[in-house]
Amino acid sequence: MKISNIEAFWLRCPIPEGKQHRSDYGLLTNFDMTLVVVTTDTGLQGFGEAKAAVGSSGVCASIVTTIEQELKPVLIGQDVDDINKIWEMVYSGSRDHYAISRGRKFPILGRRGITISALSGIDTALWDIKGKMLGVPIISLLGGACRDSMETYASGGWADENNIGEQLNSYISKGFKAVKMRVGIMDETVKTSINRVKAARKGIGDDIKLMVDAHGTFSVPEAKQFCKGIEDCNVYWFEEPCSPDNRHGTAEVKQHTSIPIAAGESEYTAFDIRDLIEVRALDVIQPDSAIIGGITESMRVSALAHAHQLELAPHCWGSAFSFGAGVNVAFASPSAVLIEFSAGGNPMMYDLINEKIEVIEGRILKPTKAGIGFTPNWDFVKEFKC
Image (cartoon, rainbow, N blue to C red; front, top):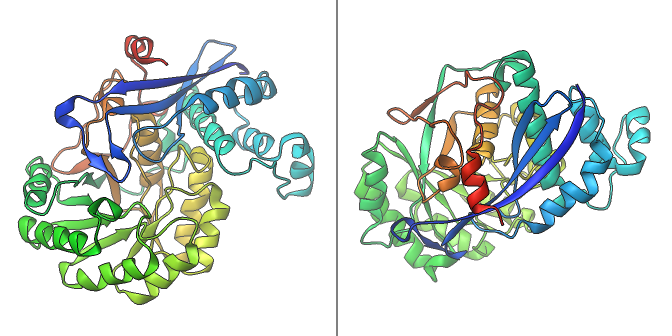
């Protein structure tokens, strides 16, 4: 079965006013994603997501151009079974034959950034096709699930000190026993972030897992001050304390605190994750399948987590297709115990697909549907295509 076509659609859907939130990225009024569609010569289609931004909004035009103008001409006619070969073709470009024959990478200049995001969507779509070809979920192709179900955590938490407890409890009332809130530059001062976390812990009690996410916006001294201020709040992890460009700074923060440090959603390829591990910068690894290089590279990151005895917690903030990719990777990994579930206004998780994503009492069951398990609502795609 050969690749006959590859398409990319930039979708931008307004978020209803009542479900909008404000963070360090500003007021989120739209949700963007790049839907990647790979079609075979038999008409079978696979779907994936490629990201132009870690958050909800981002201009995806460059990803669409990269996929349709640069990668599609190279990949048309390739066997859909050859997922590893296709990954090497994109990563090494015209020198891919050297990479295959010598057993090491000869990467293109764009070995990080848009090209790898574009590859991420294509890679996931190929895994989707392979699962559909065999009539099994992607998890079966990855060696099967380590667990029958997994705990999810509600990812949100933008409210101020007076309302953060109520906001997090609104997630808990739906069955979640783990929640995440945002901190950092959006609060203007470290003290404000500390006070919000203290209010959150007081509001939800001691039995709920609480994670905090700074989106990489603290300086190293600020992150240290923040950690000291929340030491008695029993925080499950502190996510992206500093800029992803400052891995040594993140490592310094980790050495300063007993709070587990999480990072990885802004990284490209397992090589970036390796570099974080080498400087002992993290305890929890968070690859995003729509950024890091697809399911293929996410599983390589999973192997790093396993080898270094670190927790794996895929970043699943995006559409249903990157969520599905992260879920399959998490279930296949012995190092993963939690799955992120978007608690913000997210039409790409619900309205984009024909299927319903179910979380029951804070847990999600292992995937059972063929491929990634989701199919696009083409009326939605037509309406919100840029």
